Image 1 (tube, rainbow over the protein chains, first blue to last red):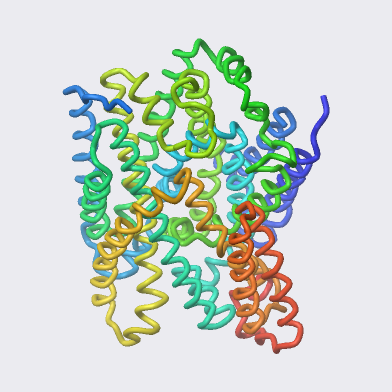
Image 2: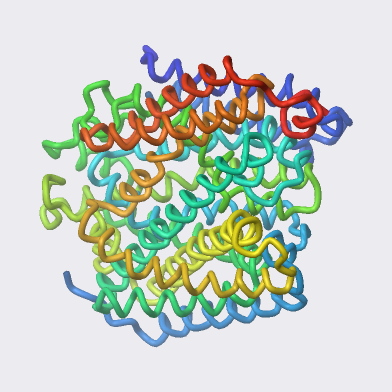
Length: 61
Length: 497
């Protein structure tokens, strides 16, 4: 299976989104550093969306 | 195109929906006394209502009609409007930009631009957004008219008039809170309706595999199942999809669109605002499939009747034809309810946001600086009617000039989104952008978009190159003009608190 250049770029975009969600955002909003169960954790769900999109573009482009 | 006769059960379902949603909206509208109640729902929206409202503020009648038509024409590339143009932008907006807007404590995006740059930038974008919203209202009214014309045989002007009156009653009474709460219900009905149509279509065609086989055998569908088509694609080459849509149009829409931002600014806290965005992103993982699939199903089932998507092809006929030919009694009522829900939700979002912009950024600062809150509330309500009338008047031009309502909407956006996103991005993230730089970026960006659009450039490229031109002008002029002091930038720029 080969991935086309466009798909690689989209995957990179979502990689940037993951970096913002997991690394940058806790520095901007201190409330995001507080421990929260995964089902109520907004960063978990945001990361889930980003990873799902990475899988979609890896498989369907 | 043949129209359908609604059966009693369908009429009952649609009437029950309309009555229920109107009663809910009026009940929620009680106690609207200030402009903050009217324009920001008294900052009381729960995250899940704001999230559902965000989804239907973005996806509405124009998308149901327009995406089905464009999916028939171009295939699954249309899903990128959500997968590339929305989800990525929503995630970045929620975690990077939302905290900054909350710190700034603004009601509108032009208000932020005015504080970050100057009054000229604020006024310019308030006027441009208001004009854009009139155009958007027109595209939504065309969507409604196409559907009612195709399904019920109603005339264009009767459909436009009836839709405008219904939405006008609703939005003048309750403001953003009524809009958001009824949007939440509409979102659920819309998802159910879209899923039902897809289910019926897939059943008729004999399953997803049969659909793919039938579509693939048509001579003009070579790239219909490629999410990112080749660089030579006539409308959506992959570099333009990623650069124009992913990097400019999408983020500009989700960071700078008043109709979108207003929902999240109406929540109780910054955390609620962020959660509303992420909730919308989760729903957006599924919704695009439900909106694009009808176009592919129409290809599989009705290609001989609808014909190849060449010059003169009317993409707005695709969805009504599917519904007329496939949907049984009862289900038709639910689908009509879903469609009416999407029309109302979409129209309300744009009308209420335009009214907010006009009062906050033009009436209060320029027309009547000493206006009381009660006066602004009255003006806001009156503007809802004015905007609906203007949208209705423009709607016929949209109908005759554009191949699909989705194309019309995106074309309007591409004129100023590049410049807007450049000013927002660098205004929020850097201290170097100056007031004069902002004015230069704004003028150069919009002028570039205007020139490119007259040369027949694809609107995705127009958006991208106007962003590049605006950014170059912004930094060039900022380098030779004085920057604002740290105290003036406090709460407006990342890292300056």
